[in-house]
Image 1 (cartoon, rainbow, N blue to C red):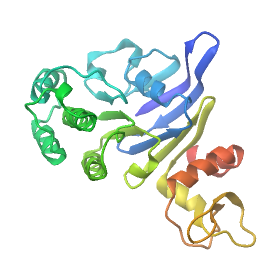
Image 2: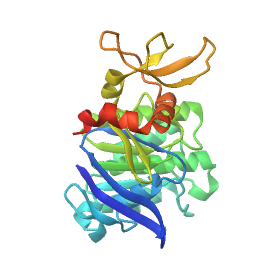
Image 3: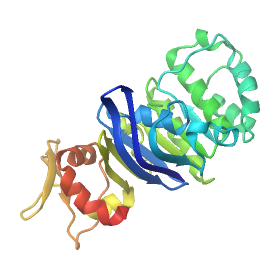
Length: 278
């Protein structure tokens, strides 16, 4: 379980990034972490793994990340958006990383490299940016930690690699792991995540499962009497996010439209979903 209570952080004095974030994230889910640029998504992930020190109360698996206890560090793995690339072979980087993670799984590492078609005996610095990203993702998956935090993991991946990424990450939840994916590329993860968290600097706009979203909202053409939260054009005419009528069937969730609806109608979204978050 990840618990945040009034979490605050600022890189500069009098310029806070996170202002009172309170959030509970149960284990065993794949979370999509969304928000506008600058709301602190990357900052939050770094705080959770102990790389940054925030104010307020926050714990990961019962541990205080500020203390960077070894028992916590071996349970959590961060895949940053940009990572220092060392002039070492992929397999050598894995060899020095594995001892820090008791859960390391060499089979996962080799399988992921094979699926991504990443050569294990070449230096990272000689690989393309996309290949580097796939190598580092493979490494982090092989750490096999209960908590995996990923910041824009699909940036730089081609379309086939994104499909492989989704398949590999989906397999983690079969083992009860917790994955948090911060991204602007919502199309890359909309079929993967089962819970969505939308942040703003001052707090959490939405924390709900996909089932809860489809139970409250409908994504379709608006009709007479609908409460419309957001509308955009499509090849088949205007498509809307509306408050779902109790007697209508559930629809698939359009992640981009959901995000825009939440940003456009913050107070209404809080009212609709607050009973689900209590």
